[in-house]
Image (cartoon, rainbow over the protein chains, first blue to last red):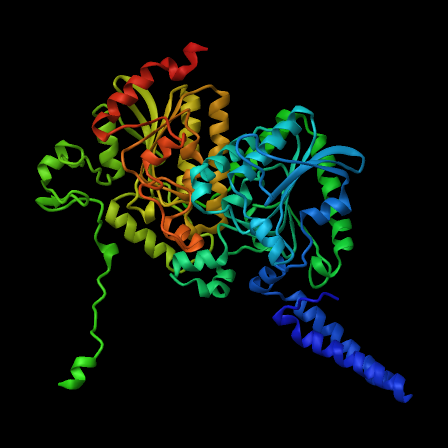
Amino acid sequence: MSSQLLDFEKPLIELEAKIEELKKFSKEKGIDLADEIKTLQTKSETLKKNIYGNLTPWQRISIARHPERPGVLDYIKMLFEGFMEMHGDRYYGDDPALVGGIARFNGQPVTVIGHVKGKNTKENLARNFGMPHPEGNRKALRLMEQAEKFGRPVFSFVDTPGAYCGIGAEERGQAQTIAASLTRMMTLRVPVIPTIIGEGGSGGALAIAVGDYILMLENAVYSISTPETFASILLKDSTKAQEVAGVMKMTARDLEGFGVIDEIIAEPLGGAHKNAPEMARTLGKSLQKALNSIKKLPPEKMLEKRYEKFRGIGQLISG
Amino acid sequence: MLKDLFRKPKYVTVHADTVRKDIPEGLWQKCPTCNEILYSKELEKTMKTCGKCGYHFRMGARERINATIDEGSFSELDADLVSANPLGFADYPVKIAKSQEATKLKDAIVTGEAVIDGKPVVIGVMDAGFVMGSMGSVVGEKVTRAVEKAIAKGVPLIIFSASGGARMQEGIISLMQMAKTCGALAKLNEARLLYISVLTDPTTGGVTASFATMGDIIVAEPGALIGFTGQRVIEQTIRQKLPEGFQTSEFLLDHGFIDMVVPRMQMKNTLAALLDLHTNGGTDNV
């Protein structure tokens, strides 16, 4: 059981604690409470399904941002063999908010890139909360072009509130690095398979999320900005994030409806952090399946389909 | 009496969005940087730039097209395209209707075929007066179609950007327009056709992070605000004052992100000279 609980899980946790208490009591005193325990257990199962089966968008955001949620480094350990991290953008620096490298996926050499958030404050400071600087985007693009040179498929894992904003990021061309990635990824002649694993925020997320087949974990979110920024811009009040979360249509189900993502990956009950190995197994199977089907396409066809996917997104009334 | 002293003064809210601040109206205009009083007729002659200090007022899309192309050469593309409301955001259609009325435009960009100094081009001009010049489905689609038209005709593409970024009200759909427009530009690259991107005040957010910074040649008007994140947000994030001239055209020139800063009065000649070096959209040189 995870140590960090979310607000909406409280009733469930309380019930589970009660069951444990009864079990202990029954054992110590030698009183048979099996019936009572069973009733409570049934109640707990129903409650579990009710809570986790009817998550509000905001609750999903809390799961997506859970500090113990598996990140790209966890998936690298669980799904890829012999990962070798590569550093630096060859222009300015190395960005710890975005990692990349080469590994084997079910035996095949592949390139892996992804945003890294910290699991605690210290790590978060070191990883800049998963918000890449221009160097991170340039490193990602460099590694993707290297993957193209050597015919390696690219797996990207998106988990960022957004590209970092600051003086240095602007001075070193944050916007330009994103635009360059979007443009180049559209013509990359190897399969590119992005997965939204946690938070997909804004241009920072999109900069590594242009690809052939886009997967998204059930409780991940993907949006034009964080709900906090959205509320701050449109309602001039960032504390209204919870309110706008539903309006923004940022859940996997919403995005599948828009045609923005291709497949939703089911998470263990309560979220990926409740059972990371199970999450990795499910994701691994879908990644392999996606790769197999893309590999069947001739490169020209693959690129045409990739372009058409994005070309078709937009909601217009006339024309 | 004494009570009145402590009473909180009441203020009346004046809605600024009913007046377009960027279009000078009336006989006289005051330059916001040097305070020079400018006669509106004179301002027309100087293409809305201050005769004293060179300040560039914002310019609407139609005016800009007229100031840039050969007279009578414009034929508009996709003029009727209007956005749907993908998020079902209650205020959005109202906001669109207001902007349409104020600007007489359908959305934040006008695209078309035109001729500049005798050379055919496809041109797109954004209008910052339309929902902050933000990019939603319509801007994304019209930019993409403009690129496709340039490819079909084998002519250069020129886009004047003026935008607050991706349009929040269309959510993720707006974000995807960044990938869509960049994808189209990748095709323009394959066709080896010239794309000149002109950045005007303001060019920020998702537009800067997509087609605006992908020009073969990137030109900016003097003093334009150009960047990724808005200054208020940066200040709130880093909790420090931003340096003088941060995110201006000149700042971007210094940092190597644009090719040149060109005053509006010289823009047409500059574009003409660049087009002249790229006969048949640049394909003749290959």
